[in-house]
Length: 424
Figure 1 (cartoon, helix red, strand yellow):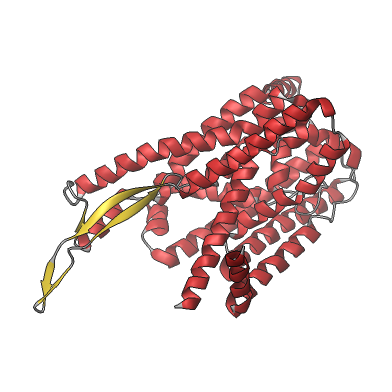
Figure 2 (figure 1 turned 135 degrees about the vertical axis):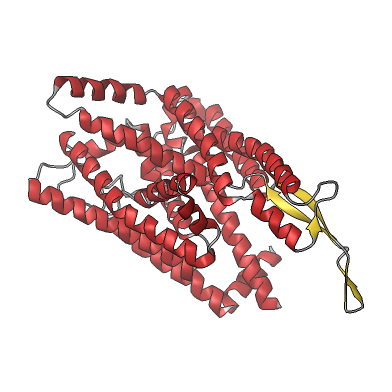
C-alpha cells in the first residue's frame, strides 16, 4: 500500500504526467457530457426495449460509451473510425503502395495512412447514422420528423462521431494511453452503476449460487486476461563479437520478447464493427415496399438474432482478425533484416531467410493460442445470455473485462515508464 501511495505521489509531482492525466480526464468529461445530449424526438421506453432485444446493438452500446442507449449525438461512438481503420488495413494486403506507406515510410507514412482513415470515416459515419436513424424511425423509437430534420439529425450524429475521433486522437497525442481504447473503457465503466442498480432491484435470493458462480467466473477472467496479456515467448538473441579500433564489442546475449497476444483487444473491436453492419443493412431491407426484398431482409434478420449463430460468427471473426492484425503489425522479414544488420543472430538458426521463417513459425503458434483465448472471451456474453436468461444484467462479459483490464495495464505501464524516466 505504501508503494502505491508513493507512486501516486510521484505521479502528481511530475508536472508533465500530471498535465497528461488531467488532459485525458477533461476530455472524458466532454465525452460524457456529449453522451447526455439526445437527438430530437426519442421514445426512451421503446429504445430501451429495442436494445434489450438486440445483442448486436447492446454490445455496440458499450463501445459507444452508452451513447446509443440515450440516442445521443455521439451514439455511433468510435465505430466508424474503427471500421475505416479495418478497411485501410485490409487494403494494405491488396495495395503494395499502402503497405509500404504503413510499414516502411516511418512516422510520415503512418501519418498519411491515418489521414486516409480519417477521411474514410466521414462517409462511413454518414451511412451508419442514416441507417440507424431510419431503422429507429420505422420502429417508432424516433418520431418521423420529415426529410429536412432527418438529414439534420444525420449530420449532427456524423459530426459527433468525427468529434469523438478527434478527442481520441488528442488523448493519444497529448495525454497518456491510447485515446480510442480509453473512450471505450470509459463507456464500459460508465455502465457499471446501471448494471449494479439493475442487479440490486431485481435481486432474487434463489439465484445467489448463480451470482456467486458468475462473480467467480469474472475474477477468473480478470486473472486470465492479465496472465495472457503479460505472457511472452522469449527468443534468444546473441550479438556476434566484433573488433573495432583494437577493442572488442558484442558477444552479449539477450532475447526478443514475442507477446502471446500481440493484437490486444483490436480483433474483438474489429469483429464487432463488422458484425453490426450486415444486421443494420438487412434491418433496412425489412422496411422496403418490395415483398421479395422485404422477405429476404426479414429472414436474414431473424437468423442473425440467433445467439448461438451470433456467437459462432463472432468467434470465427475474432480468431481470423487476430491472425490478420498480427500479420499486419509483425513483419518477420523486417526483424530478421534488422537483426542481421546489427550483427545479431538466433542461436541454431542461420541469419536471413531462415531466421524470418523461424520467427514466422513461432508467431503463428503463439497467435493460435492468443486467437483462441480472445475468441472464447468474446463469445462469453452471448453464451451466458443464452444459458442464463434471468441474469442479462450481469453479462457485460469477457469482452468488456478484457478491454478494461488491457487498458488499465497499458496505462499503468506508461505511467511507470514515465516515472522511471523522471528518476533518471
